[in-house]
Image (tube, rainbow, N blue to C red; front, side, top):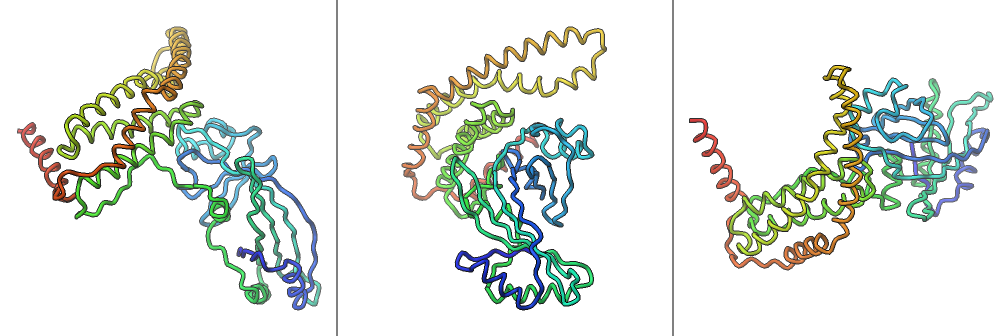
Length: 377
């Protein structure tokens, strides 16, 4: 049970109040540095898990039932392969796949631990007061103080009494994982990024306005992935970037009559040029990711040739990385995205009576269905 201590509530006042009902013993004060890990697209948190380091020890927490298991790893983990000596290798291979783990938050936790005793000098409940500071973007942010109650079996009445004492101070009961509370306090955008387009349009919304919102969202996804591409963190940044780019190009080709033909032709050409300049890097990424698979399916006598092949590919990928950074810094790339964004934001449809999202969907799906039926025949 976790409660947040309000800023205006004195810790000393709370302790003094507890002492009126119990014998209280502070048995230690410790300071721990916590580092939180996840992928860029929050694969662990989305599955209900949290990977963190407490000082030099690593733990995997299951947020739903608040269980925690220690992981025997000796270095800062980046890939699923770093867990090869643990029982959780298969779990990490399945959940994070080919993404890299990133340190997304660092906190310093000062923890005061207390034992609560009854008149017979028996410990009936334990609790801690935890003060948390977050270190983010070269800033120190005071998150707050939290009281965590640890009930002991057979002493439920004493636990309820302690809870009732805390309720007198109108403390907020925290029913979400503490990391989510930390993210709210510090405005960390934990769990917000997803490469999936989860739009829910109003079926009666004009299609031209809806498609503008969608294009702006896809543009933002491209920009969000730029830094990961520049730093070459993992291959999914380029993949998500290209997926958003491809959806913009597909939309320009498939949704007719929203924009003037000249605008469509101009941006289709410019976006096609950007995608073409990323093709080779993506192809090499796929080959390198499947490297172990190629060794598995080929006889050992040709592995020496595979060694040479992948050596050449890795060198070629380094050259492509330079090309990618050059592309993202180029005037052509920046002007294309800026021009597209400005056009969308200033867009005023000439047709004030455009068909709705639902009507457009019916037309599009019917057209595709007829194509399938025709080819089926």
